[in-house]
Image (cartoon, rainbow, N blue to C red; front, side):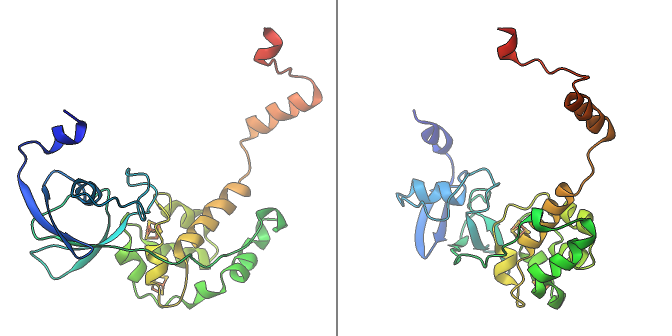
Length: 218
Ligand code: SF4
Ligand code: SF4
């Protein structure tokens, strides 16, 4: 018996609609597994299947509510009368920058506003935070970056899977996830290394400390 047969054998079934197609499927499957189980060879909008890559963005409406939520197809189990629509977006706008071109940490905020001029236009509509399937306070992250608080902003985006939902829903054309990525990058780039590491590297440079490679020992 295959792994999928073991998962689905003798399990209760539910009726769902995915991308307009009515499907009857075991209730133990995720949205993507249900599609595959029904014979749809879907590959677009499917990625890691672990809830990490952010590729399988779906709109979900459940039978007991009129609310529509943004979720990940690989992490959402099918339910009776659930309606699901996969979201495929065009390529996001590019923000080109090179960290090595930023002279020092004093310049970061000025550079940020040149790279992301639209970030200041945030109208605090909560749209980005509402759609985020990882529950990130995206709006606050943008506000922190605009104020130059890049470490705090970057920390907020640690769980970001770059699914682009926040960007797509932003009425001001802001790419909050890329703002978050910038914040994380500059924080790491300009972070002073631990003093004991610097001292150790300096000893290696001056020859006071010798590094023995495995190949040297062979
Ligand atoms: S911050 Fe944006 S890109 Fe990141 S997980 Fe949330 S919605 Fe997706
Ligand atoms: S969706 Fe855009 S405008 Fe609305 S709060 Fe988020 S970043 Fe600001």
